[in-house]
Image (tube, rainbow, N blue to C red):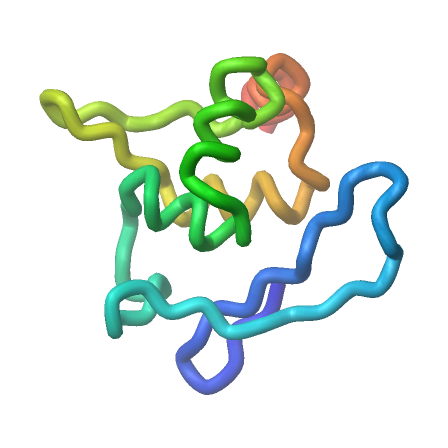
Length: 104
């Protein structure tokens, strides 16, 4: 993950069996750089991870998405810093990520 000219670049994470070509691209959410935000909603989280919102919900429900949300009333928000760390760690399953996070 790189920061260049005020934009966040996230290297793609490939699932087993996918093409090993890697790329990075700038991420902007609703005209505002994610670098200035601490939390993002579920739709923005899916966009950051280059997946559909329904795909993210599937990963959440099966335990393949490791980051737990912060809840504000009915809102489910995700820490941009934790998402960054999660992607850097290779996007492990929830149980593995929570153990790794607890050992820091």
